[in-house]
Length: 74
Image (cartoon, rainbow, N blue to C red; front, top):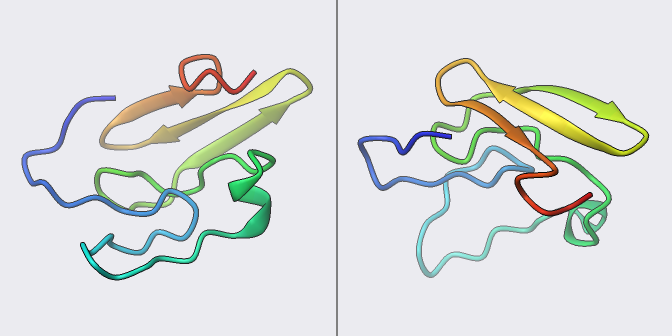
């Protein structure tokens, strides 16, 4: 994925903007690595997600594809 111009980051499981000093609650399944990201970390947009028996991939219309192989989660 390419880097965005701003330094803003978003929670990939909730889509909420991450603010330093404010705790963002991540769903339990995501914390355990059982859930793929649903939102882009760079812009907070909802991503297209495809889950397969051996992993997943997620695509942001602006920032491209992230794959569980790239994230070392397979």
